[in-house]
Image (cartoon, rainbow, N blue to C red; front, side, top):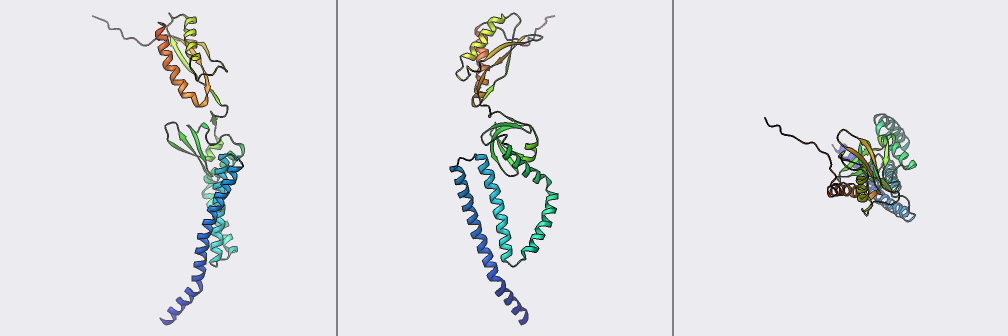
Amino acid sequence: MEEYIENIKEVLVEYTPKVLMALAMLIIGLVVIKIIINTTTKILKKRNVDVTLQKFLGNLLNWVLKILLFITVIAKLGVETASFAAIIAAAGLAVGLALQGSLANFAGGVLIMIFKPMKVGDLIQAQGETGVVKEIEIFTTKLTGLSNREIIIPNGALSNGNIINFTTEGTRRVDLVFGVSYDADIKQTKDVLLNVLTSHPKVLKDPAPSVTVLELADSSVNFAVRPWCNTEDYWKVYFDVTENTKIALDNAGIEIPYPHQVEIKK
């Protein structure tokens, strides 16, 4: 028993300073990493680096520094770094095979940073979702949906799929279709619809709005109504023009066809 206790004392005497030193190194290292990340972020902001790139580089630097700190702390505990490196390489291979999707997502994130099909604040449509880009991380991209939902899309799928960016050009065309009765005068109807567009303060004069006959449908003459607006005004113009068109057509005595039910008396 005395020999066992002596062995424990020897182990404690030998390893306690190493453990305490490694723990102190870990705490100090985490604090230093936080300072480095904050300093790097401030420098990038001062140099007006794109916000998307700022966040991506911050995430990447954070992971790299923490991995290096982990290796340093392990070495301080007396683990051979060469052997540890071999273990990491073997584990890395196994993890890499198991996490091929994650590696594809990382590669996708890098491709997004290089080719920049979008940036933070852009309104996009991708992978069947529509939303404003909130953050592009190492593995995923976060969107804020139109109904204020958070949407998370893997970067691998995002970089390999179609991305529709509504913000890039700065303006959008609102595509609307309105049908009127065959009894309605075409010229009068076009004038009424065009007046609705030109009187709206958010509809752009250049490109000019247009009203054209789209098709002669079964029960109506359909008009293609195409106003242009700034991207941020899209839904305002969409809803306002729809409402104002109904009011204007009613005031002009132009009928909008709708199904009628006729009661047959026996």
